[in-house]
Length: 177
Image 1: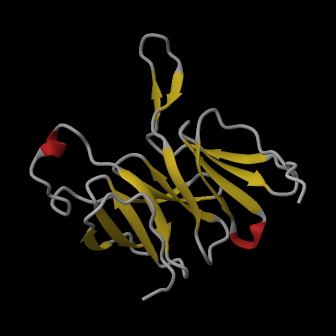
Image 2 (image 1 turned 90 degrees about the horizontal axis):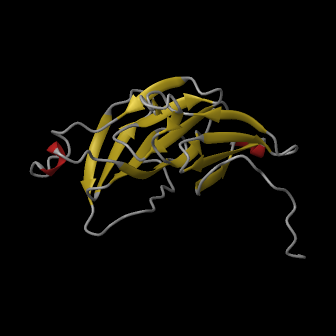
């Protein structure tokens, strides 16, 4: 081990929040605060796809410039589905997307599921991170109000909301129940 970089993947314009190998380690998915998820070819280090979840692009009315509005906190390749990712943006929604960026499903928790006493009438709730169960069946998403929403990925239905006592920025699932 020389400490020398073996490969460099260049193309993001802000902090990188997560990096994950895809199924079979043929690609790498990176999530960035610049609002993009990039798919990288492991062999060539070239970016093959840059994904901006639907509704996350905003245009400045004065200058006409396009901005990517919401940080991508995590991008997880879905086990058993080589062409799908779960993307967690710092917003009220998570996305199941194909590797080409096509949105297949959105996940969100309704106000009735996360009732916290009215503060979110002014400040919207946001997801901070997520993980997928080993078999790719469940999605666990950490909300900014110390709740973990558990979704069935196939149906898109939320199964349960768990309240956690301390601030959570990391969640991991080791076995399917």
